[in-house]
Amino acid sequence: MTGLGRATAPLDAADLVVVGAGVVGLGAALRAADAGLDVVVVERDAAALGASVRNFGHGCVTAQDGEALRLARATRELWVRLAREAGFWLAESGAVVAARHDDEMAVLADLAAARADEVALLDGAAVEEAAGCPGAVGGARLSSDVRVSPREAVPALAALLARRGVRFHWRTAVVGVDERGVETSRGRVDAARQVVAVGHDVDLLDAGLAEEAGVVRCALRMLRVRDPRRAPSPAAAGGRALPALLTGWSLLRYDAFAVSPALGAVRERLARERPDALAVGLHLMCTQRPDGDLVVGDTHAYGDAPSPFRPEDLDDLLLDEVAALLGTDRPRVVERWEGVYASAPRPFLLSAPRPSTRVVSVTAGIGMTTGLGLAAEAVDQLAS
Image 1 (cartoon, rainbow, N blue to C red):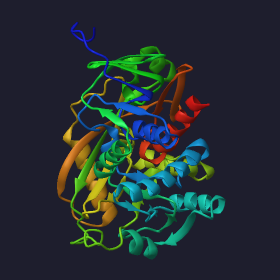
Image 2 (cartoon, helix red, strand yellow):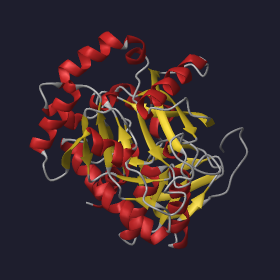
Image 3 (spheres, one colour):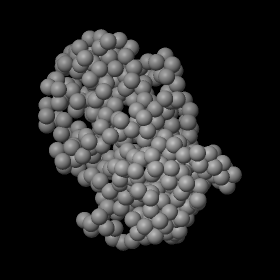
Image 4 (spheres, one colour):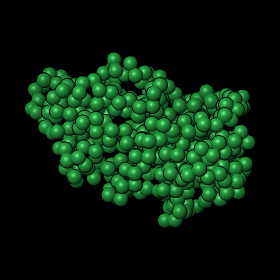
């Protein structure tokens, strides 16, 4: 019996069942399929609709450190491979950090000294030439970063896995997990190994685990805008895609920049000059879509249940900052959306509530950057 008490027949059986068809869930299914396992994926929606498709599509590899850098490098290799196998767009165009203040340039110089193989310093003219950002005092090119269009890449990856024999049960909610498989709204899936990859919704299956890990929800606002600098875009015309454009706000969000003693000065100046932006967790960056539009963002709100009612002045703040960054009038908004992802004191959740089960989530805003690599490690643990 499930749900309202109606009897249901067994649904499926496999070597491994994956709960969730976002990037982490698909990464787990990929690793298991590569190992020759019979795999079933169960997803409550009719398609991946969560954080995996509501992001910049930016593999922000170079700005990571420690465990995140290791997972980011593994994930980058997988994105490049999968773009070739599944046929989705991928740009290996790197990223440019625009330094608009001397203290930001000092941080970039320290990172370049520590990571000369991946970070090259630029002068202001080179930043404008590479990323279309005028007025910078300098910057840096982060060579390892990659970019996909998540709305196309995620369903293309699911389709590739389906062609390889992975079975998907869409519009099917999981209501329980045990050492023999999962109970769903359509019946039981028997599997000796289980990967639970439901992001911030881990509390719906195990509230105690979520509370112990400190998992809360992060709601972020993002916009898709017409690029006010050029029409048509080089990418839209089949030419060179612009690199992702990061700013001084990015220095506060990614661990690699902590190598610099100057980072404190950046934080203090931004807190003094823009307390309003700091209060809403502004991360000012832009990525170019294949059609030439820009994805810009973002602002953040954290909590167990962030309010769905977000004031318009958050988007006004973001649009004003984008206009100042690009040296243009406010861009025209094409789409607005809110993404929700898991956030916790540690950037990754990889828990083993029992030997046969792994609960896995990227608990920071770097799911596209590290999720495929983290999922592979979860499956490897189960296999061993």
